[in-house]
Image 1 (spheres, helix red, strand yellow):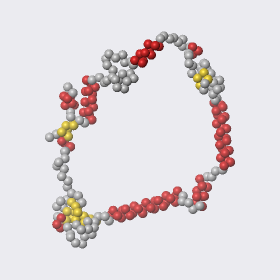
Image 2 (cartoon, rainbow, N blue to C red):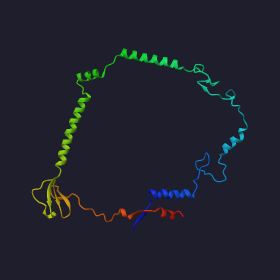
Image 3 (tube, rainbow, N blue to C red):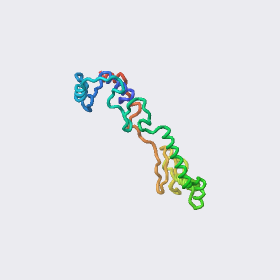
Image 4 (cartoon, helix red, strand yellow):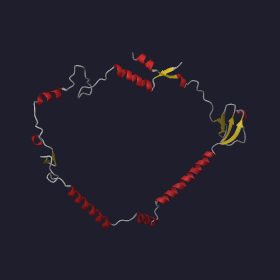
Length: 229
């Protein structure tokens, strides 16, 4: 008997049906758990109080009539055409001069302390007998190659394929060594000698108790429509 399930396409259709029939609820302004209703004015009590207490005001639009003018470093911006110097700020020319002076001082300090090139450093390391990057890489690569060789040798010697037998009863009982493996056609399986007996390496698995892919049938849009009536 087929089992119905809801796939991604069906879920999208189902969600569209829900949005078609219902309006999403919205939280009241400033609230995290109270939702709006049709009779709400959608304003918090605090906001309504501020509006009522605001009174009337007027502004001519002139910058000079503006209260609380912006300021920079404590200097009020009185008009829109003040220069950086009039506000006590650094001018572009002054900033460039200070940057040039700092660069000159840094170069002088490096010359005083002295420096070495990468070639000089490499030569000094080699002279002290320390390992360089190239010598370390060479040793690491050699160790990796040796390790890979041992792994390959171990894996290749783990099992030795001996051939094919018609039945398990035909497997040899003498002269076997650990890792010998035969294929038996009767049960389409491989058997390996573990030192004392033949051990099966695999075989067929009974999957009759599992659900088949064809048993899973996605709900159709029509079936979803019937659910959301």
